[in-house]
Structures are given as structure tokens and as C-alpha cells.
Amino acid sequence: MRPSGVGKKAFLSADPDSLPSPGDSRWSFPVAPDNGPLAHLSRTGKILTSKKANRPSPAAAVEGLRGGTTGSEPAGWLLLLLQIASARGKAPKIIAGPLRRCCWKESMPQTPPFAAMFDSSGYSRYLFQSKEDSCEGLYYHDNNLLSGSLEALIQHLVPTLDYYPDRTYIFTFLLSSRLFVHPYELMAKVCHLCTEQQRRADSATDQSRLRKIAPKILQLLAEWTETFPYDFRDERMMRNLKELAHRIASTDEAYRKNVQQVIQSLIRKLASLNQYEEVLAKINATSTDRLTVLKTKPQAIQRDIITVCSDPYMLAQQLTHIELERLSYIGPQEFVQAFVQKDTLDNEKSSYGDRKKSRNLEAYVEWFNRLSYLVATEICMPIKKKHRARMIEYFIDVARECFNIGNFNSLMAIISGMNMTPVSRLKKTWSKVKTAKFDILEHQMDPSSNFYNYRTALRGATQRSLTAHSSREKIVIPFFSLLIKDIYFLNEGCVNRLPNGHVNFEKFWELAKQVSEFMTWKQVECPFERDRKILQYLLTIPVFSEDALYLASYESEGPENHIEKDRWKTLRSTLLGRG
Image (cartoon, rainbow, N blue to C red; front, side, top):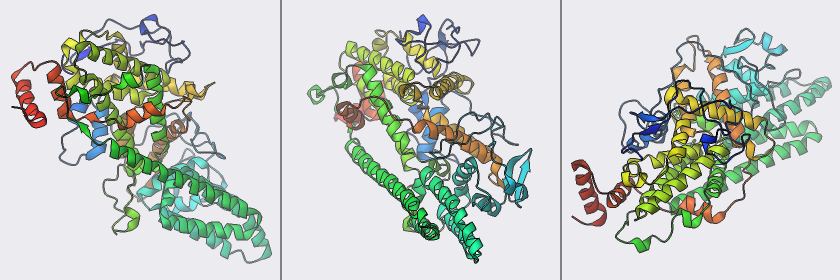
């Protein structure tokens, strides 16, 4: 039987390594041992006896996300994310001193032609070349770039005849530099430095040398436009890009075609982004309605998710389609811009600041919330207890398949929806549900020890992705709220500038490492066949508001105490016009 309220059964282990594996018969997952995110973990883990835990569920914070905040805490969607991720787990320790160097085993996520690797210290093994040893304004320790003046770091970005910046440095600096200088200002400085080299090339020999520099400058532009294309939605960026591209093309006719390819590729990316945002706006417009009609008009409820998609495995695949599509449009710079509550660089009001700098990231957050409310709506909507129990078991199977696919974000959204109070209070309904599989899923997403179980599963899914033999095995969709929380505390725990005015580049290596993992995950193409009918339902079907969820819950299983009775009467009066 499901315990009432937000408290429920949870698997507790004295040994945190004792995780269930897909090969364990008690796991009850219909998957081959090599097909789940935990396929690379130990096969000997055992699940200990379950006991009641006096703590909220992984998603219990959803209940408290509707209210406002006070003080200096982040507001709005960012606070919502941090609260979800912090529901039961402890916040990561804020790093006061030098950053702990994490192991960077993954490739940088930049698109071809670059694929640099980081060494075990967290720094690029290819970073240190002849120019860097003599570059003033940069500070190294043990051959690692730790800090530098902003001007020196910008100079370090610009290629010369015998130097090209390491691609990991390009990614890290372009990601973090926007905290100190606008991208269009950075582009202007890069153009100026490149132009100065061209002006100094007076003789025929110098012109020949310049033609050798041109492809390096073009490569830098290609990497910038490929990895941070959203920077070029600013007309000032495009203007500088075209000016510099024109100079490159003028040095040699052979470069003209390459220049055109870079610009055309960028234009296609921006056009795709605009189209995506237009479609997203239409979807949001059709899904803003909230259901308030309840048992009084059952004929108004024409269908539920099971009538649209009876196969929970198919639904998990369609959820993965939505997740990967929305992930693919999140630019890496959004992780930096999301934490700047007020852009101190933007004192002037202009048309360039009108466009939200983290809208795709916010749209992804909204999708998580919608899915949670959709799950709760589908469970609370049926009139009969057996239908509600059937719906719960259906979503347990969906969540289980999401876990096997590596779709941890949908998994957590489903768990969040099933643990919202209007759902978790349905004692009679839960008594008809076999919750063993759900308990295991909750164990995997248990926030104890800073989400140790989830992080272990994520590492297993990541390792599977690196050695994947099929496109399905490449899928890794992280629990997004926790990813944001990790980046947030990294940003809050370390200063951007050191007392001597240098940029704290050691911090930004770690920031780039975390964002680069996400960049790798988001580039995976979904291997499953799309079902437009199911996708349309998931994206546009109206869902209950929070008040409507509570009213539906009380109508299904009556209030149990005076507080619930008072709320029920208020909701009936407000939503149904009844006393």
C-alpha cells in the first residue's frame, strides 16, 4: 500500500554501491543486462529490505514551487529548478579556495573539425604551445593556465602565423568571456587584431605570410559560428563577421568558397532556431489552458493518454523525442547567461537586448513542469478507482522504460507528478497498485548523498554512450534541474575575478567541462520513429491547474481532516461555483 502524503517507501542501503542492476531478477526490468544505463556497473549489487523513510520524495519540492521568494535568492524558473534538485539532497559544498580538478575523460563536444581531449587534471593536454610561454598577462601553474588579464586572454584567442589556439581554450573562453565583455565587443576586438596584422603586411613576403594566417582566422570563425551560433542573432555580430570574412576572401580567391560555406551554415542554423521558436510559441499558445471541469461534466473528457498510446514503451520513446529536440536548441552560452539576473554589461536599452538570452533553457524547464502536471492530471482525472490505479501502473512502466533508455529527465518529471500531494494522498487508489518497480525507480533518483545513486547511473549511461554500438545506446538525457544546480553552485562558489584583476580561468575550465558534457549529450539524434498523434497529445493537451488537481483528488477520495475539508469547500466554490 502506498503511504499517504509525500512520505513513502524507499530502498535504503548501508552500502551506496549496492545498486540494483538490470541483470538482477528483482529489478523486474524486461531488459537484457547490456541494455540499460547501469550496464557498466557491478552486477553483484543487492537491494536491502525496504523501510519507510521520514523524508519527502525526490520531487516533493514541486509542492512548494508555486509561491514567491524573498531575499537575494534567484527568482522565477531558476529558483524552481534549484528547489526541485534540492528537494531532499544537500546542496553541494561551495568551493572557497582553488577549484578541485575533476577528471576530464570526455571529448570536447565541438563539432568537426575539432575534437580535442582534456587530460586527467581537467586541462587540455594540447594547450601549451610556443606563444603561450611568452605571452604576457597570463599566469600558469604546473603548465596549466589559471588566470590572465582580459586583454591577454583575448590576444590568446587570435591566431598568428605560427600559432592557433587550442580548441578547448576557444570553447572555454567563448563560453565564459560573456561575463566580462559582450560577444559583439569581443568580435570587434578580434576583428581589430586581425586587421592590424593585415595592415602591417606591406611587402609581398608579408602578404604571402598573411595568406597563411587567413585559413586559421577562418577556422576560428567556423568554430565560433558552429558552437555559439546564437551570438550571431545580434546584427552587430553579423556585421563584424561579414567584414572579417570579406577580408579573408580578398586575400585569396580560394578562400571565398570556404567563407561562403561558413556564413551559409550559420544562416541555416539561425533559420532553424527561428522556426523552432515559432513552433514552440504556437504549442505554448494551445497548451496554456488549464482544465477546471471535473466530475460534473465527464462527457467533456473524451480521452486519456492510454487511449492515445496504450504502449508505455512507445510513450517513453516519444517523450525522448521531445527531450532531445528541446535539448538540441539550448545553446551552451545559456548556462552562463541564466545566472546573470541583471546584465551589468547592458546599461543601454536597445533592440539588441529585447531577445531573451536563455529562452530555450527556460522552455525546457517549462516542459519538465508540464510533464509533471500532465502525469498528475491523467491520474486524478478518472472517476473510478481501478482506472486511476491502472493509470499509475501505466506511468510506472513509462518511467521504467525512460530509465532504460537513459532519459532521466522524463523519469524524474514522472516521479514528480506521481508524488504531487493530490496524487500521493489517494490511499485507496495506491492500495490497488503494485509499487515494487516504482520503489526501485525512486531509489535510483534518491537525493541522498547528493544524488549518489542517480550520478552513478548517469556515469553508467555516459560510459555506455561512449562505447555505443547503436544510436539508442548513445542517448543520455540528464536530470536537468540537478545539472543546473551543479553549475549554479560552481558559479556562486568561486569568484570570476581574482584580487589582482585577472580572470579566474581555473573556474571556467570546470564550467566548460560541465557544459561540454551536456553539449555531447544534446547532439544525439533520436533513433525512435515519431508518432505525431502522441506527440501532439503530450505537447498540447490541457492539464489541470494545481487547484483543479486538489479538487479532483478530493472528489475521488474525500478529505481526511479539517484542513482538507476547508480547502475542498473553497475549491468547489471557486472552481465549480458551489458552496
